[in-house]
Amino acid sequence: MAAGAPRIFVSHLAGIAVFDPNGDQVGRVRDLVVMLRVGRRPPRLLGLVVELSTRRRIFLPMTRVTGIESGQVITTGVLNVRRFEQRPTERLVFGELLDRRVTLVETGEDVTVLDLSVGQLPARRDWEIDKVFVRKGGRSGPLRRAKGESLTVEWSAVTGFSLEEQGQGAESLLATFEQLRPADLANVLHHLSPKRRAEVAAALDDDRLADVLEELPEDDQIEILGKLKEERAADVLEAMDPDDAADLLGELPPDEQERLLSLMEPADAADMRRLMAYEEHTAGGLMTTEPIILRPDATVADALARVRNPDLSPALAAQVYVCRPPDETPTGKYLGTVHFQRLLRDPPYTLVSALLDEALEALEPDAALPVVAGFFATYDMVAAPVVDDSGSLLGAVTVDDVLDHMLPEDWRETEFHLDEEPGGGAGEGVSAHGA
Image (cartoon, rainbow, N blue to C red; front, side):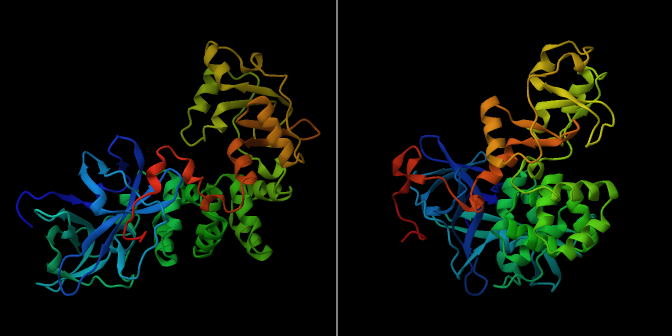
């Protein structure tokens, strides 16, 4: 490759935005497609896997890329929106090449692939992988960093890239997707092979894996949970939102449910059992047992401090529930709800008991899904309290759980109608995958 030719490390391309010539974003880069070649010739970069706003993944040939600069990809604007399907001769860089154990030709040392660089050939529009960034020494685990010299070598200086997924860990892939939201990382995992998916799941910490599991289709959840050791599976279930964990447990055989429940903390296991006792499509089956609960003598300052918890979803942080002790669900008498906007309008020393929305009725635990959905639509709510006959707060239903249960079971695999997107010409044009 001639001096001065553009070179980009692939880790810098993960998740960057893809724009058309008018500056409108069409999607984000999720992977790179290369074709391995005979001998030690560098692989040719065929194109990018781009995820549209509809979550459909398409193939963007490099011939349709006019520039890669300043953290963005510019295209000609002519896209084929047919779903990307990998061909036998193609390899995905993030999914298959990173983290491989390969061998330095000169010394015979085993090294780990941390990154790859791609460059554009001079006077041509072709791109190829030209450099490999590797680390000497043993592989590192999720809790420790391996020590060893890192160096960048020519593609031809290493051997061991094969068509099978062997010697491939998850560290660099996780680093590449570190900034992704759980839903986006879940989408990445869903498109990996089962072996690679298990490797990545094993390397994620419990909280991150719990967040990702909540966003995966049911089959993927069961597959991943089944490949974890039972003690860790129980820890991950405890880290999930109680309603999501209960839904997942409910899909397992009864003996497996009991084994996992016996490994949980007693309080968490009690919450799971209580949620699993309700019908799935009722307020009790939809609710979480961990809303923000305050006593009547708490102040606005106390409430805002609880709302600021970054681990809370926006829906759960939208309101607090005022109850008499005990403060854990099921509580003492439920007194009412205070909305976040009301907290912002009153002095910090104001008691929350003075700000109650007492006119807002609570949901009954056996309220059916259509009733719950109607409640949200009628009162423009993003969360709602669930109260039993004795007046105790059992939990809260959030709008995301309502939508999750109202959409078709395969909604995570379903795109919106692409022909309704702005710029109706997006479906025109032909790529290597659309021919």
